[in-house]
Image (cartoon, rainbow, N blue to C red):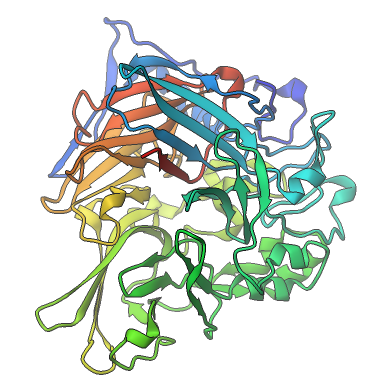
Length: 573
């Protein structure tokens, strides 16, 4: 693979002189260590590890984490057929494409590194297509999103990179560092969405980029929001840090139909500073969890001067013990009671929302609105803006130990919860009750909750997520290495674990039949010790059983890619 590790160290020093334990195949006679963790209702596929693999495990953990963020400069010009190395793709598997967004490069050719969240978007596509009705062809494509920043920072003739924008979490080296007013760049690396026949790569701080869905050519930036210019376009050529932060923290919600006609817009200003990554909506409401942040004067000044990253201007704000949740009307003219929507519902405990799995509402026996939200949350203490993913901007290196917390308490780590809100719909919409509790009492570190999309917005029985087994001693709670399935009716828990020294990304549910858990889970498995990626197909009904794995497909080694963020399944039907 023509790539460099995400480290600012001279190439001759790499690989590490430390002896990294190899991937080990246990002979029949060798004693093995089985690691199992369970709750009363949990069925778990055991993780087996030979005693030899325990040796220097902390060293292996550190370097495995580095290999999860290795740059990939290569792109595909034509689709590449993937080889099935275990199992088989069922003939009844739905036809469609699994798109996966995420960063592709973390180090340029001039000594600068990028935080993974600042890496240029690298879109991956796995296309499933039936052949003669008796077998499947699975082909892989990967292309960089040709954003304005990528055009500026990449020379296609020499295939060299020179980072010129600092990014939100990163710093540049040498002459690009101090007084560089190119603050942020739209890297289109966060998520991908197929809607109304159009494919788009998204980023939290700017407008989406439209992508041609088959060859992954970048069509261009999409102006969906008339009259609103992206923060990036306004401030990439300089500007006041306070203004940048203020624009970032002003929530504006747009709702489009399949023809991209605006059918709803909600813009509001609240007396607080928020950072919103994910949100939810029900039949009548938009739901925003107010992750509080505050402006840091010293950090704002040093970041403006190019001495620290832009994110130094902000920090999380744990000043209140409650968590505000804004419930906003999707159709204000149809609301038959007078509620001040600027007043949030106050959840009784403090948490930082990461991702929403599902949200729905119903009426209770008194006719009040009962809203249920299933999500992943963490503590303000764990979600430290300056230490996300273990990136040290001063050294330009990744250190997973940065993410450790004293005591490593489970409630502070990312975990799955259900939030229940009861609103009085009789007169003024006052909140009667707001509760939060762990889903199925599952408290292991977990994130990226997903459900069968056919049940989105309605009551669901099952939820899936990526989870951390706890088998990696030197890794605090991330990356994830197993898929967890929660039955919200029986409160049971089932898990499937990746092979030793392998991580997984966000799971995606592919529906097959009429039953809620009938279908498949797609997830990328990162075999970092051998620098290979695999697309894994799991039977969503059989999670926890010995035959959970349906198929494992291998990405060619020269196309091995770093950890992806969010994906999307686009069905051909």
